[in-house]
Structures are given as structure tokens and as C-alpha cells.
Length: 312
Image 1 (spheres, rainbow, N blue to C red):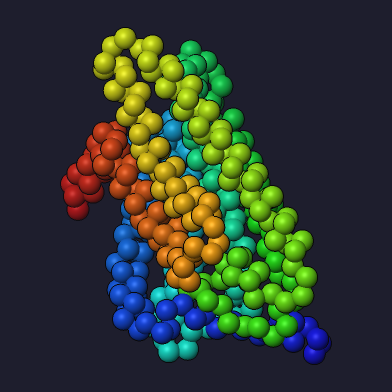
Image 2: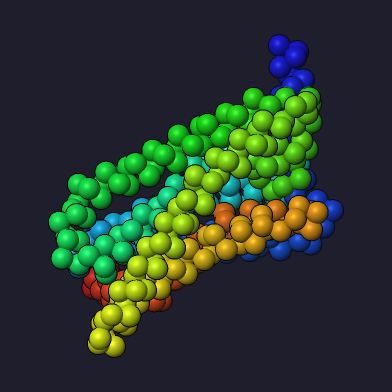
């Protein structure tokens, strides 16, 4: 038992921006504003997609899952961050850290796969319109989404289990705002070459391959759009894809910009801001992107609002 306690501490100290109190105060205020906005925005997308019959299509079914995913994504880390930023003692239990790792990894993997699935849906709708309703029926959509969530959970169990088995030799200081896998690998002691090799290889399957599928889908969509003669048809096709492309850029762009540069050029605080971006910024922006750029969603929200006030 002593050996286990020495290897795995009872709690972790999250250093965050402890040497910059003004940054922590600013983050606390920003999280108090953006987290409720994220929850309300994503719940609104879910409600209008379920209540408006005009939005009962595969595209909005996948969007509903993305909104629910973003709620879980931010909720897995933001409440803990708010609690720590508002207290002088910034800690998290070992078990709490493990649970946070499982949830955060599951949500990140599932979102990567879901974005690829959404691009496949757009490919079928634009490039194979005659077969779209036949292929993307309700049962098949449920099956696809279930597989995406299952793959995300399985990958998270594999990834987090590998990391949690690494000895920490009593090291309990994490230079991050929440528990994250790269930070735990960094403080691990002993031989960790296997984990450092296996995890990037696994990331290829949950990040690089889905991104390649997204590029392939939009290459086919772009080719099809060039063949559409009417400008109205091209505008409509572009409108159904632009919001998804913006979300894809927000999800993959910052991560690739950091991980493709040499490790020596990455600043100490860069991973912290990257974690905040994925946990807070992206889930907050996604509802507004799909609302502001989509006439159907805006119309459904207006209809829901009018119905609510008429009921009141």
C-alpha cells in the first residue's frame, strides 16, 4: 500500500497561473460569463432541433449531438476550474483527476469523429442527393452516432488507462488548470517511452484520419458545387457547409498549429491556453456559429421565443 501511495499521490496541485494572480482573476470572470453562455446556447440548439419539425433531419440530429457533446466537454473541466480559481488551495483528488481525464478524452475523441461524420452527411446531401434520404434514414443515423460515441469511450479507456498506470513517484504538481494527459506524462517517472510512442500513434486514428476524411468530403463537395449552374443552388449548398467548416477550423486549427511546431518553441503557458480554448471557447462559439449562419435555426429560435412569450 505504501508503494501505491508513493506512486500515486492522494491529490494533485494544479499550478495554473499561480504566479500571475491577475490572470487567474481575469480567467475566473471570463469563465463565469462564458460557461453559462455555452450551456444556454447549446441547450437552445438542442431544444429548437427537437421541437421544430422543419429541423427533423440528419444534419440537425448530428448538430444536436454536437451541442450535447459541447455541454459535456466544458462541464467536465470548467466547474473544477472555477472552484480552484476562486480558492487559494488549488487541488484535485487523484480519483477526481482520473474521472476528469476519462470524460475530457472521451469528449475530445467523440467530437473529432462526429465532425467527420457531419462532413460525410454533407457529402451525401450535396453529391448524392437522390440517394441521401435512402441512406441517411433515422435508424442509420442513430447507429452512426452510437458508433462514434462508443469509439470515443473505448479510445478514452485505452488512453487514460495507459497513462494512469505510469508511476508518478510522488510527483503531484501539474502545471495546468485541469488534469490533462500530456501533463501527467510529463511528470511521470521511470520508463515512459512506450506511452510517448503509443499515444501519438493512437492520435493518428482519432485526429488525422477523421481530418483527412473531412478534406476528402469537402473536395468532392467543392467539385460538385462547381458543376451547379445556378448561383442560388451554389449559395444554398455553401450555406449548409460553411458553419461546419468554421467549427472544423476551430477544433483542428489551434491544435495543429501547436503540435506541428518544434517542442522547444512551445511556451510554458501555451498548453494552458490551448486547453481553455477547447474546453471553453469552442463550446461557447459553436452555437453562435450555427445560429448566426443558418436561417433555419434562426427562424426556429424566433418561433420558439414567440411561442414562449405567447404562452406566458
